[in-house]
Amino acid sequence: MTHDPYAALRLPDYRLLLSSSLGSATAFGITTVAVAVEVYNRTLSTLDLGLTGLAQFVPILLFALPAGQLVDRVAPKGVFQSALLVVSAGYFGLALLTFMQGPLWAIFTCLVVVGMGRTFIIPARFAMLRQVVPLEALGNAVNWNSSAWQVASICGPMLGGLLLWLVGAGATFMTAGLLTLLALLLLVPTRPLPRAATAEPSRDLAALFVGLRFIFAQPLLLSAISLDLFAVLLGGATALLPVFVKEVFQIAEADEGLAVGLLRAAPALGAVVIAVWLAHQPPLQRPGRALLLAVTVFGLTIIAFGLSRWYWLSFVLLALSGAADNVSVVIRGVLVQTLTPDSMRGRVAAVNSVFISSSNELGEFESGLTAQWFGTVPAVVLGGVGTLLVVGVCAWLFPQLWQLGPLHKLAQPQRT
Image (cartoon, rainbow, N blue to C red):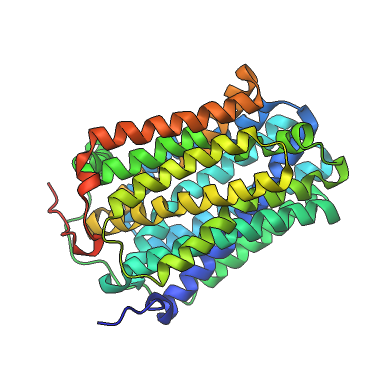
């Protein structure tokens, strides 16, 4: 049978869901640049830079499991739209605080609100995907989702840097808020299919941990998620980009926002190139080996980035890191979607979101903290070395990852 690289895109509801996700992710990319530049220019503290990530991670850690259970009990679409409204309120709050030169603690409070909204967005979007895409097009949809995320990760930071340069931080946050509201409106016409008839999730405390138990009972899921978690947690350098721009590359102050935005977009630029290439290829025959190789390349590029003293070389290295990272994103995404029973999608996605946010938002805190202790360049280089060690440990602990065959041939496990 001929491979159709556009199978998922032929579905109208999926196109709306993808467009909404693209808009909200672009708004988030705009905000990450604006927050980083605003906070670092105010405080010149790498620790405060790290705290911007921690502020968004804490609500995800605390409420991800209840959010997953909620998504498994009610319509994911309604949860998705409500969460987008909360996120937009956080962005508008940041705009107001910037215009009024409000206190730093209030900025962190708005970031907590954004983190709270994103806590519910992740499992709702995950569960809704399966309601608008049939199983045979699911791998293709996951790949296009990854492509859209990477496009947003290019456009968002670049647009954020450009807006900072042209109109300042307040108007930049306002733009992010309006774009998030547009993402909400795009979901209105969608008509997701109802879930398959299953027993209603229990309301007791033990039910909150069903998704966590399920992941730990599936070695393939646990290995792929753990590899991505610890690799990006240790190898993340994007939180420190304002420091590199100001102190290592010595970019003029007026151009710092634009320079940070371009560097922040570089990983996504590499990722979207590899994602489009993957979309036009048949399923990987040895995805586990590809995953281990990709994370190895990611670690090596992060080490090289930490040692680089040239802006455009660093841009290229970050693009290569994004290309390598996106291979792991696609493989992990297909594994989670394929192996998760329909009745547990919200709770499994919620647990997965904790792992993802641990590697991203918590990784930003880790980067800021280690930079405060050891210095910016040593922190990045040590993180890359740590990523290589994680690859070796995961290959040793999970030999089934090395032996993994085509993902579309995996059978969904029975719920235990």
